[in-house]
Length: 507
Image (cartoon, rainbow, N blue to C red; front, side, top):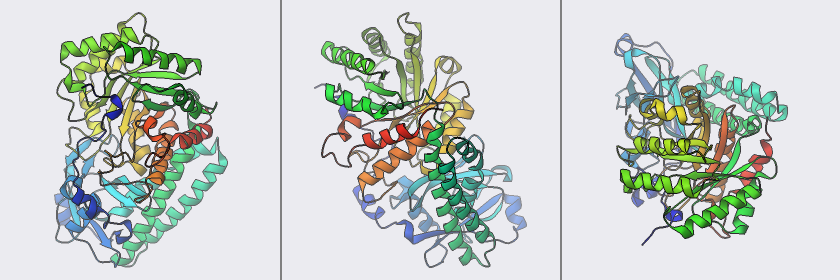
């Protein structure tokens, strides 16, 4: 029986148990604060390159290693241990799974050559879980929260100045939040004892996170005029659905629909997609055709793959853009994923009827899998120059319940743009709150209310991705058609995407 693309699961990599989900409810943000203790660094730590990290509970008592792991994984256990040491500039992995138990502190890491490194791991504030990016300057004893707060605060100014030039009201709101964060960081540095510093460190991270999320949303005003607001069609839509989707742009920003073709050899399906593309063009929207979803890539041998690509290129010649690789870097794709992607890119580029934008989507995760599959490490090591030469856009596929991003979004997107200056960047797949995603242990926006969480995720990450000098578009919401249906669990995203489109009138 032929499956339908709309039934494709976006649940990758992590297999969460129901018992872990039950435990997760008990690991709340309110029970943890991170602490930093001052004092001189022991010579032995200097020589060994050891950085000790403190986390305390709400009573001010230092948590042990198990306590830190409980918060990091939100109760999911070992499957949620996602720490990596990264290069502070490129965010490529230096050390996989660096955290270890320490007699003096909550955890410790050995810094490569005793130098600076960035620790990433999933960590909560009241806004939800983010990819914490804590810049460790060298050996010593630190507060995890304070390091992360300082890393956020110190990187915000240049982006804020850019916003100020186009939206002074939005920048004023962010500046007020940054003032709160600065005061909290000053208070943290002046703490008289570790317990006091614990409380102040937690306050600093909370304030810096709030400022970062507000800044990311304000940056929608920086979106390029030609960046698109996108959704994904996992099955041919009807006329009303097309009209509703095209309306997301609200006349302020061009809309694009990503088309997920199930069976390229099915004349009926291909005809339906041609009609969809015609309707999109009539409404002034663009069509991005996905060559193959990552979930089904391994089902095609080389010959079948080439046949599928040829059928798509011949059957949908009016496509405006082609996603030739989906979720590259995902460990389930097999050893030939890059080769298949390259062959698809050649076919699109070489066809005389095609002069379309070529898009490659990378699977976002920093630490939930191996060092080799961490997104920026994988991209730097595995994307061949021939593929990059024909690729116009590098996008990310993000599922925050499986791989938190949150306050790390701007830094991750900036690192991607800096690593690949010849390509535009985009958020080419996003989803939250679907049945096959809810088993992930992490949350953003709201732990209890899926509608609030979905809205917060869509608003934040769409704004963060659009509001960049070389942005191509966002967010190409995966379950768009399903989520827009009346009564759908978690509710629609169309309104919030329209809000972002209206607020991101091109610069």
